[in-house]
Image (cartoon, rainbow over all chains, first blue to last red; front, side, top):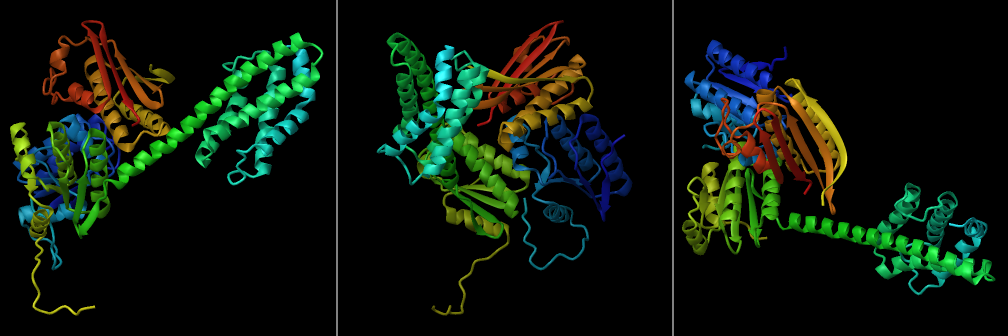
Amino acid sequence: MDRIPILRMGSFLLVTIQVDLYDRLALTLEADLVQMVNKTQARGVLIDISAVSIVDSFMGRIIGNIASMSKILDAETVVVGMQPAVAITLIELGLPLKGVHTALDVEKGMRLLTEMIGTEQPEESEDDDYITD
Amino acid sequence: MSTTLYKVLQKKKKNILEYWMSLQLSDDGLREDLITNEDLRVQSEELVNALIANLSEASSLDLQAESWDPVIEILGGISITRARQGFSPRETGNFIFTLKESILQVLNEEIKGQPEVLFEESRKINRLMDNLSVITFETFIKGREEVILRQTDEISEISTPVIRVWDGILALPIIGTLDSSRTQVVMESLLQEIVETGSGIAILDISGVPAVDSLVAQHLIKTVSATRLMGAECIISGIRPEIAQTVVHLGIDLSNIITKASLASALAYAFRTLRLEVRKSNIVAPKN
Amino acid sequence: MIISLTKDPVTIQKEQDVVLFRNRLKEVAVKIKMGLLNQTRLITASSEIVRNMLRYADGGVGLIEIVSRGRDNGIRLTFTDKGPGIADLTLAMRDGYSTGKSLGLGLPGSKRLVDEFDIKSKLGEGTIVMMLKWTK
């Protein structure tokens, strides 16, 4: 069965979705990710969806679920790299993904997580010009 | 179509072409600046060949018949190119009218002695060529419309300039009425630019928008929400007092949106967010 | 008058067919030069309906048509299933209503994403959903 790989980066988990998700794959990801958060005691989850061209209400719900579940396990979730067309479609569909943090790319998402959690991360450059919420 | 007619035309194909060329070349509307005489000859010959060849196979003069597709295709191709090259409708029309003239001329020469046959055949040719003229015009106009549509697209693109005011800050001043299709373009180009530049803050300045009704407000809210989903922040600036009044009277909730009165204050807000400082320097700048 | 130029029926029976259907739809949309945003809207809307068909009716058929009206081109999708049907269409079209455990955005959400939307359903016989999106 297909699985989406979850990478561990320090106290964060990184998931890069490269394929079009069908429902079972998304559900498996949800389960795997929650398991991983628990196992690794991760403080943050980054989901990179820059390669995803379609997010429908089911996928949207899974993303929301992952965020809420991780929150209970004391980890913040940041969705990064959403395509413009996907963002507009989600809004029109009526799914603004409230409670999910977003960032433009993995790097900015990482900074946002670091900012929210305040864990020790590799030295930031002097001009840390990240955006706060 | 009678076999006599088709045989006559087949035999006289060369005459028709020559006569047609001479008519075209002597026409006042000849556009040597747009098309060389050689190219014109090639075009004309292609059309005459296809037309006459078709008269031999298809007894039907109904243009709906599949056998006419090649002729229509050639003719359509010529008209659309002419529309794009900037030929006038008259010049394009004359192209096909002079062909009709040439065929009728040849027919007249060949069956002079039989007025009744001549009349009957001329009428058929007439009807056929008229129908082809209609196609010529339709395609010509379609070609022109395509040009207009492309220009409309270009105008709406030009009218929504996304400006990179600072590293990480985009601004989009909107001037003129915001309707649904325009907001669409505004929204798409702004979001696209956010991705391309990796800018975390976008300022949508609406000081040049004459009125904000509930539909426009909805579009603005949509743009802001979509920007947020992508991981950037969208500020709306340039809200005039009248607009603030209407917005509240219409019961539109903008409380989730960062709004600023002017572009300058939006920029100041953006600088603060990015932890940038603008200060007056003590050092006198060299004048040059 | 809307003229149908091509018809391409796709059978949807298992979950992977959803991806297949999306790809087929994407091909057609690219062929008629539909913009990326409208493509995304249409594919997302169809995705909602296809899921409903699988969940409530054990699948069905999705018909992809290229249609034209004047100089506009578009894609019309017709989803036909032989499922249990929908008891109250007005309720089903309302935001947030669901008999399953979903968000209840499927039907009303897809309607917002397309230019024309029509749904017909008969209890015990099945449901037909039609949606149309113009390229522009």
